[in-house]
Amino acid sequence: MSDTQLRKVALVGNPNAGKSALFNALTGARQKIANYPGVTVERKAGRMALPGGGAVELVDLPGSYSLDPSSPDEEVTRQVVQGEFPGEDAPDALVVVVDAANLEQHLVFAQELVALGRPTVVALNMIDLAERDGLMIDAGALSDALGVPVVPTVAVRRRGLDELTKAIEGAGSQDFGQRHAVAELTMTERRLAARNIAKGAIISESGEHRLHASLDKVLLHPWLGPVILFGLLFVVFQAVFAWADPFIGLIEGAIEGVSAGVEASLAEGFVREFLVQGVLAGVGSVVVFLPQIIILFAFILAMEQSGYMARAAFLMDRMMASVGLSGRSFIPLLSSFACAIPGIMATRSIADPKDRLTTILIAPLMTCSARLPVYAIIIAAFIPNTMVAPFVGLQGLVLFGLYVFGIIGAMIVALVLRRTVTKGAASGFIMELPRYQLPPIRDLLIGLWQRAWVFLRRAGTIIFAATIALWVLLSFPEAEPGESQLDASIAGQVADGMHVVLAPIGFNREISLAIIPAMAAREVAVSALATTYAVEAEDEEAEAEGLTERLQAGWSLPTALAFLAWFVFAPQCISTIAVARRETNGWKWPIVMVVYLFALAYVAAGATYWGATALGL
View 1: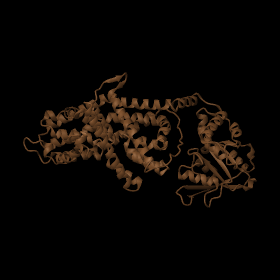
View 2: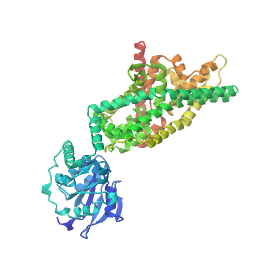
View 3: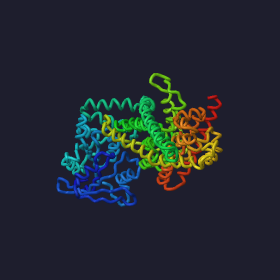
View 4: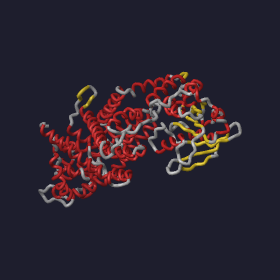
C-alpha cells in the first residue's frame, strides 16, 4: 500500500485514553457528527491534513476494551475496525491511542489491534501526566516490542502532533513482518504480555508510583485483598456505633429539652400533643441517627475519593461471577447501600440486559441508609453494649452481621434468578483503576453535607408527612375513659387487621402498624413506633420515656430479632418501586420484586422468631 492509498484512518483505544482530544487537535473545525445507521452511537469524522499535502478522513471510534464487545458502543467499534459495519468501509490505518499513565492496562487492547495486521501507529498520549507521576517511558523500546511506530503525544497541548501525522502518512509502507504474533493469545496471556511489555518500556518510576504498585499488590491480592476489604467494612460498622454515641446523646438531650419546654409553655390540648407526640417524638426519633449516617458516609466517601472503591469492585468481580453476575454490577449494588434508587439507575452501565435486570431485582436487598435507624434503635435496645474482643463491640458486630446477611441474601437471589428467569452466561468486566490519593478534605466535607442534607430533608418531608398522618389516625376518635387510645383509634383498627397475619411471626400490634407507613420510607418505622407509644402513654411520665426504654419494656428478644430479620429483606419503598418500573419499562418486574421481598421478609422473620423462641431467648 502506498502513502496515497490512505483514505480513512480510525482512532481507537480504551475509554479515557484522550481519543476525542486527539481527534479535535488533528481535525480542528473540520468535523462532521452523526449517528451510525441503526444505532444510537455517535459517529465523529473529520478531515486531517497530512505533511505531504494530502488529507485523510479521520474517524473517532467509541472507546472499547476489546474486540469481544460487551456494549453497543464496543460492538460498533469492533464492526468498523473489522470492516463489517454495513455501509462503512474498513479503515486503511489505525491510530491506537493509549494512556501513558495506564500503559499496562491499555496495552491489552493495543496488542489485539496491532495483531490485525493493518497499518498501525500508537499514540502514547498524556505523556506529560505520566512524567508528572514520575513515570519515564522509552517510546523506542515500546515500538520495538509492538512492531509499530510509537509517538509520544499530549493532545490538549498539541505536543507530538507533527510526528504523529508523519507516522500516519508513512503507515502504508510498514513492514508487518516485525510484529509479534499475538492474535492467538488468550485474554490472560495478553494481560501477562502487556505487563512484560510495559515493564520493558518503563525506564524509571518515582517512589510514589512504586508505592501505588506495591499497594495494589497487597490490596488486589486474590486472597489477602478480600480479607482486608471485609476487615475494613467491619471497622466501619464498629465505628458507626462507637463514635456516634456521644453525638446521639446530645441530639436526644436537645429534643427532650424542647419537648419539656413545649409541655411547660402550652396548655394540654391538640396543639401540644401534635408537637410533642407527632413532631418531636416521631420525627425527632429519626433525626437522632444523623451522626451514624454521617460516620457511615464519611467512610464510603473516603474509600471512593482515595481510589480504593474501584479496587473493591475489582475484588468483588470473582464473587459476582460465582452467582452469574460481573463486577459491573458491583458499583450499582454499592450505590444501593446509600439508596436503592441511584443504585437501580446506575445499572444503565450494564450492557447485558439479563445482568442488568438481575441487578435491579436484587438492589433493594443491599442495606440502604434508611434501614440504619431501624437497626440502630433495635440493637441499642436489645443487644448489650459489651466488648467481645479488644476493640470489637457486640453491637457493631451485630450491625455488621445484618449488612452481611443482606449481601448473602442478594447473592442467593441472584444465583436463583440467573439459573431461571434471567438465565445466561456472565459477561466480562474490565475497568480503569484510578490513582491512589488522600481524600481532599473540602470534597469530603461537601459530600458529607450533601448526604446530611438529603437525610434531614427526608425527615422534614416524607418522614414528617407519614408520621403526622399516622399521629392523626392514632389520635382519632378519642378513647373513652379507661379505654386504650390505640384500641379506639382508626390506626388501631388497621393494626388489628394486619396483626392477624403478622402475629405468627412474633410481631405485636405496634409493629404491625409501623410497617405500613414504612413503605413511604423505611426509617418511618422508627418514628411510627415512637408516635404510637407516645399516643399510647397513659401519663406524662410514661410519655417522657425514650423509645428505647419502651421497646425494652414491651418487646421480647425473639420479637426484636424477628423485626431485624424483617428489615434485612423488607420490601422497598414506593419511590424505589417507581424507579424500578421506569427502568424495566413495565410493572411486571416491580411486582415480582415486591412479591419475592415480602415472601423473604416474612419467612426470615418467622424463622428467626420461631428459632429464638425454641432456644429460650
